[in-house]
Length: 301
Image (tube, rainbow, N blue to C red; front, top):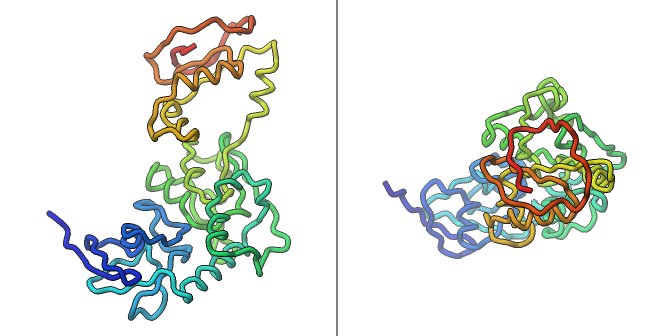
């Protein structure tokens, strides 16, 4: 059954959307950009950050557009002076509790918080923290969490709970002491985290980042006494291309294998199983170890 359509005006432009659509989605469908920080469609729609506020005629105050449904005849303004001032002040308050070491942060090139500050014209923070120290939790084998960079958007907790159905992280304590962590503040290595990395992908700042073992890998490749084996996950062959501007889903298995070979890996294994390709002999004449404790997999090279 088709949904009832609702007509409204956004920035004096007539817009028609299905009933139940939020103001944020309606505005974006009409080409109006409303900034947001905590919003992830169908995953985290809680109106926590208040960056997406807009002005609705007749409303007593500004409303969070990501959770505010459209109504027949509604008039919305997304970029008034009142709205801009509110967004800037809100972001300044968020930045007041954020450790800003942007030059050395792993997310400095693709940080949503930094981009938002640039978009809103914030070039100085009036309420900058004086002595905010790193709050590192690195017990897990795959990630590092620094709550001094967390903006409490709750995107990581939502994706862990709703998408992965694991739910090992959440908000602890209240008020200024609120922070993201595991139950009873246990280390991530002590709970049933599946190391999927979705929380890292969802995080808009550098609060969550992958552990970087690049140095260890390069050192192993440079060691002639080691036989170096790599086993990329199956998904990498169809996601790696996006990093190089290729279409989403492009299969770059051949390019990936060639690149790994040129880096110096002796063997490249396919975790997908059932797939084998011929390979040229390794350029490095080194004896393989007698035992490789690896999961069931087939060699690509």
